[in-house]
Length: 286
Image (cartoon, rainbow, N blue to C red; front, side, top):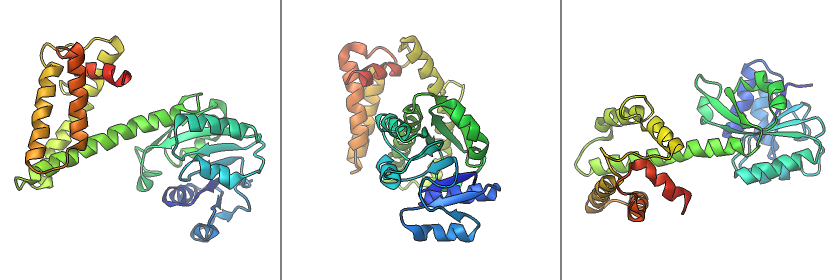
């Protein structure tokens, strides 16, 4: 029996298969378009006759969970551990776990937190959820791709963690692009701003006075948002100035404008003298 079968050979899946091969694993591959498997077969992989593969461990990397349903069809999955690294909603993943169980298998859900070039590289990690015993049986194989972080038995948790990280990624980098565009209207090159942006990103994740990731976590857990030194009302006014600056420069303001509306709503709800963390109360009650 091969160590692992990789199902789905787009950029992520193909890189996973190559990474498993480089780590010395016996690898089978399957793709709905069989020609995509040819480069991997040339590198030593075996072509699986079906997506159920010759392995106990099936690693799925497709565009979504419907693709898994379409690929497996009516095949039985008795004794298989299906590790699906596709994207979806937490409820989709929970439903998929029931679907796999109905065919005799076990589903481990995952969210890999690097793009294809980062797979198998230092610092790569993946959120996994589902039965820990099943994950533990294959953890050594999966470590070829990344660090293994099991976040709980609930199959939806891996996607919640994954999407939580992506929300930070997308919103932070979109704000960075707004910042670069705003400075660009005054002739400032992006490379000139990079050191300051790096300092901000690093500071937010650190332990110093700018370490708001940790500060907000503590405030949110306590349900107390001190605002004596920097109230939400003050920050809502400042954000309004930033949105006006973008407008004056002729730039797009959809995302900053929505952020201003959220701050102003929390202020209007009577929490303007509390700190920034109070915004989460408005997020929780839309």
